[in-house]
Length: 140
Image (cartoon, rainbow, N blue to C red; front, side, top):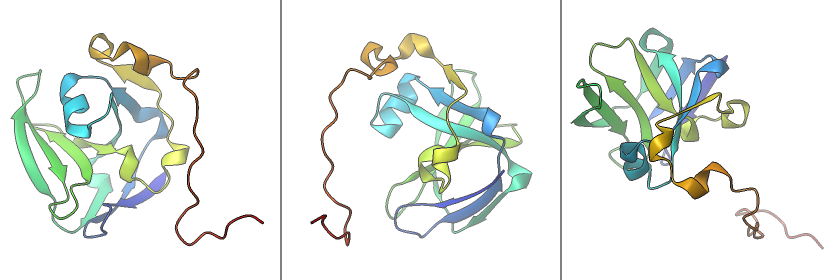
């Protein structure tokens, strides 16, 4: 499916072709730290199918595989964009930056041994009312 997205401030935009079957939740401790959340959701996208406008910054680290991984983000607003492992021809694009994220439900989970136990089932956590979106008219 064709997807598009951007960072929060709009300095970096992209278009890509993604297979909705390749959406993964990662519970590894690096993803928890990078995202500031209990897990991160990504979709694998072939480099040849990704078109970027703008220049992301990259933080380089060594992954559990021993390969160098470039974790990219917007240098202005900090939005996480994708990671690219050395020697791979695909990226893991962060689903949170994809416009069509509602059409990319996770199909698999990885590094579940690192998962926060409470993050695996939040059905019973009470939901609170959200404030109206900016510019939305209040119901009368």
